[in-house]
Amino acid sequence: MNMIQVKEFIDTDSVFAEKRANEFLAELSDDQVINICYGSMIKTATSGNAYQRSTILVVYKQNKDKE
Image 1 (cartoon, rainbow, N blue to C red):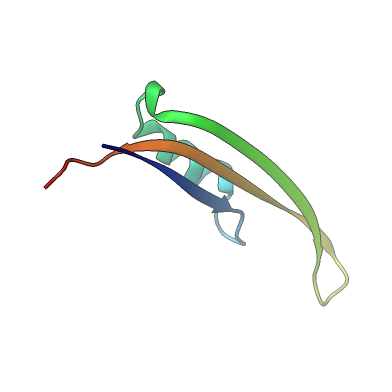
Image 2: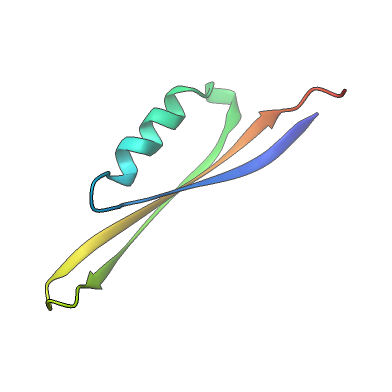
């Protein structure tokens, strides 16, 4: 049985979403990937500095064996 899954990757102060998404995608086969969505927003820190945060959603098929 196949299950449709969604995994979200969000930029943090120490790790970019792109790096973690690429590491995850490397573990999947091409036929498992259904869609990849990207979005970004500008956040303002309390200091007044603005910075961009990226979000990547990976929609994929995960094989689940019947028990």
